[in-house]
Image 1 (cartoon, one colour):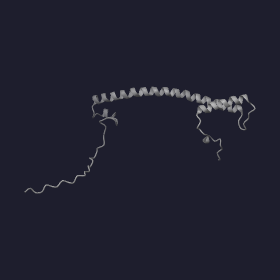
Image 2: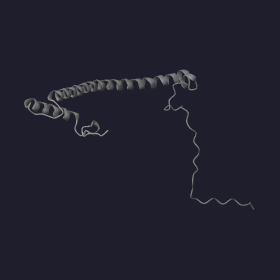
Image 3: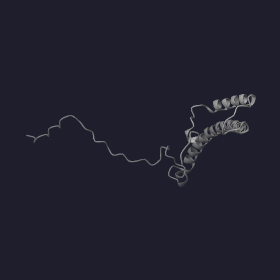
Image 4: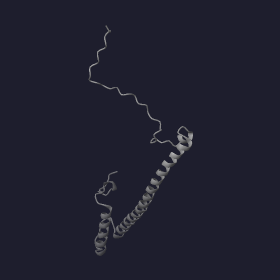
Length: 139
């Protein structure tokens, strides 16, 4: 199937959505004042309906974004409080149950200092000094 120039995938999105909405309203005002204007495949009523639908959708998205912003701020406040309480609880449980207890083992994290660590191999040091001569037989 051949794509036409009006295919949604080929629309240039260099304009912001607000600019598109403003342009649509301007076109609607001009078209309403000059009803003799015609387009081959679009009637004024269809264009007006599509513009209203687009404007309504933008307003809905804006409202939900404001709601989400409030929720994100509340989430961040709760996160900070919960991290602090988790740290205090882990520390208290470490003291109450002990480091080697199965209860404390359930709440160990990778960030805890007692978490299992990989064993490191000693690094071979390369020196540029000549080897020391062996001490010969004592005479």
